[in-house]
Amino acid sequence: MASKNLTPTEIEERFEEAALTLKRMPNPPGSGPSGYGSSWPAYIQEARHAYGYHEARMRVVPNAAEIQRMEEALDWLRLIDHPEPGRAAVDRRIVWMRADGHRWRTVCHTVGLGRSQAWRRWSAALIQLSRALGKDQRGRSGRRKKL
Image 1 (spheres, helix red, strand yellow):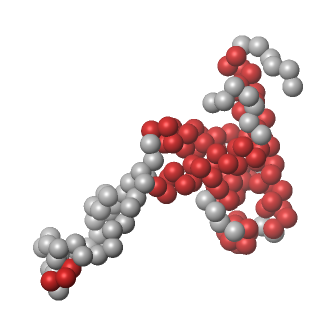
Image 2 (cartoon, one colour):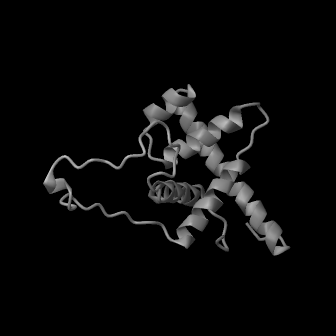
């Protein structure tokens, strides 16, 4: 973690980076549930498909530092807390959906809140994270930093 306190904007950027890193993680064929299928190999219908004459796709796999920052940001979601039951889970969902690039309309429809209330809860969650991470940083250094 950085030596200075993170602002809500910096926390938002870290969550966006974490969502992008999670999307870039490799997911090789066969790594998910098998479902229904056949053990026979796929039959090639045309000769032009047999030798790889198709568009090449390039995939950029995240490096170890990006994965570590993603895991750290995902751990931050646990710091979002609220005494009202169920509210912390909704706030975490709002923060993650915004980081994942969902529009406010989709977020509001998913969590069942109005636009202004969802925005206020998202802002409050980022501020809460900023304060919680600042306290954690002060606790690690052994002394209190001037604010």
